[in-house]
Length: 254
Ligand SMILES: Nc1ncnc2c1ncn2[C@@H]1O[C@H](COP(=O)(O)OP(=O)(O)OP(=O)(O)O)[C@@H](O)[C@H]1O
Image (cartoon, rainbow, N blue to C red; front, side):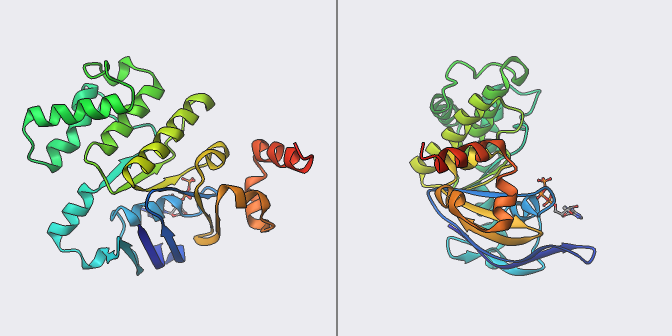
């Protein structure tokens, strides 16, 4: 669980996050949605420890980041998996080397142990035979699965995903969404996922935080987002064709 209390962050006197209180639940896919520039990435980077909040606290399973010693911060980073737009794989490394990278960085495991773990996660993301391939030799969807394997190889407690579906066709995007959700449930991970994709909201929006101008403007579940009368939310989500169609179908009782 990640608990955010009264989080403020700005740059050069301009406020970006303006007093956010929110709880990201463990074992759930927690989505952050909102218009471009609403502060989603800054919020994520504060949780990753990449930006220091101006005021407010972020607690990881009950402990505020500011109270962690240097050694504990290193431990905490080890417990964070990250999945960025585009996958961000190392082009010059094989799939196996890419996935092994966090193990080399954060553990003192022997090569054989690391290889066992790499094979375990490769199997979990259905890429058993891809270990020796280069990223350029596999499809975009497979690259995303490699990036997911790399993000979970250290068995993280927290998984942060910044638009994991960008650049994928809708069917592959759904496969990736479902894989992230399954791993979240299987491993009881606190998953935080930024998305622009309304299909993802419908598929895996167990918890949704809607940001507007750096403020938490609405929170709820994928079922609740259809029934809310909150104008800020409806303005945003019903600009999506998909939501329009689902709502029309609901109104017709289909
Ligand atoms: N390092 C920085 N220095 C100064 N301003 C920044 C920095 N990072 C972000 N900002 C500003 O913070 C605001 C919010 O940006 P952010 O990237 O969080 O938006 P976002 O909701 O993630 O948008 P998008 O959906 O387009 O990715 C923007 O006005 C941006 O210019």
